[in-house]
Length: 365
Ligand SMILES: Cc1cc2nc3c(=O)[nH]c(=O)nc-3n(C[C@H](O)[C@H](O)[C@H](O)COP(=O)(O)O)c2cc1C
Picture 1: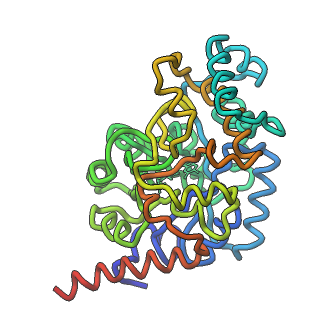
Picture 2: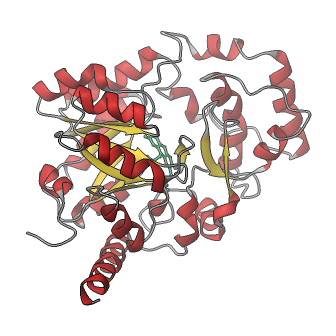
C-alpha cells in the first residue's frame, strides 16, 4: 500500500494508518486496532495478574495483530517500599493541607483503596514485576512513558519485541536513538499526562533530525486530535502520531460518564500544567485540587511518588461519588476538538479523511 499516510510506522507494525492510541481502556484498544490503527494499553496502575489477564483479553479479539503495553519506569523512586511505609513518609503538614481541601469541598472518602496504590511508579520493585509479565507474554511493543527503557532493549529485542520510549527533550531522544530504541514518541507540552515544557511544534522536528539516518522511527504526541494535526505531524517529519486525549470520551471508553461530559465541555485553557497531582509536571483538567495547591497556603509539592499518594484519596473520592465538580483527568490542549462521544472506528476514519483532504488540497494547488 502507498499514499501519504503510509509511513515507516505502518511498515514496522503492519498497520493501515499511522495512528497510535494510548489508552487505559481495553475496548478502545481493540476497536482502534481493528479499525486499522495501533493501540498501546496503559497498565501502570495494574497488578501483574491483571496485566496478564488484559493481554489475553486483547489477544482474543484482534486476530494476531500487534498491540502494545505501556508501563512507567521512573528513576527517582525508592527501590522497594510498602504502601504503608510510603504513606508514613508524607509529612503531617501535607496531610493537614489535604484534609483542609477535603473539608472545604466536602470531598467524600473513597469507597475502596485508591487505584494509585498499585501504581508501578511507586517503587522499582512494582515496576519490574509488571515488566516481567510483558516479557513473559512477549508483547509485540513495550512502551515506557516515564523513565527510560534503555536497560531492557537487548532482552526485548532477543524476544522479538519492539521498545518505544517517550521523550520531552532532545537530549533524551539522542540517548534513546544511540541505544537503539525502535520508536521514539516526541511528546510536546500540549500533551495530556506527564510532559515536559517544549511545545509539540518545537520538539518533533528536533527529534526527527536527531533520529535521521538511524533505524529509529519518530512519532509525534501532544495535542493531536484532528486530521490536520496528523497531516502536520507528517509534515514535521514524524512517521505517525501518538494520541491520548482523543479517546477519553469515545463510545467504547470506560471513563466515568460524568468525566466524559466534563472532558467534552473542556476548552484548551481548562487544562493545567502542574506538579500538584503526582510531583512530576503533568497536564490535567483543572479542579479545586489545583486551585488549592496554587494558593499561598499550600506547602511545597512533595517529590514522587509521595505527591501521587497524597492526591489519591481526593481523586478516588471524586470518581467513586461522581463528583464532576471535583474530578480531574489527564487531558491535552487538543481537548477543544473532543466534542462528542464517537465510536473509536469513526474517530479513526474522521482523522484519516481529514488528513487526506489536507494532502489533496496541497496536491491540487
Ligand atoms: C488519561 C490519560 C492517562 C495517561 N497516562 C499515561 C501513562 O500512564 N503512561 C504514559 O506513558 N502516558 C500516559 N498518558 C499520556 C499519553 O501517553 C500521551 O502521551 C498523551 O495523551 C498525548 O497527548 P494528547 O493527549 O494531547 O494526545 C496519559 C494520557 C491520558 C489522556
